[in-house]
Image (spheres, rainbow, N blue to C red):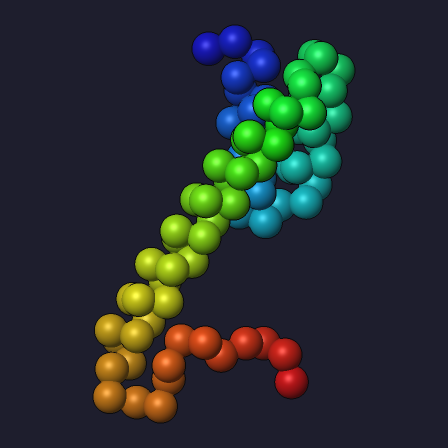
Length: 79
């Protein structure tokens, strides 16, 4: 696998796991390699899709674990 592809994968992964330092580092590395903004955006979009898919699966899992309770899956951390 070439370095450019590894950097794009790392960018998508960092978005998916919410790792800001990892994202910043790999964005800088990708830019040094001349990776286009369009390619970076595509990697970011893939990371967002993975993040959203995993998030939805977690909500489904928690709903199953707590079926029959007042939990409805759209609670937030804000007070």
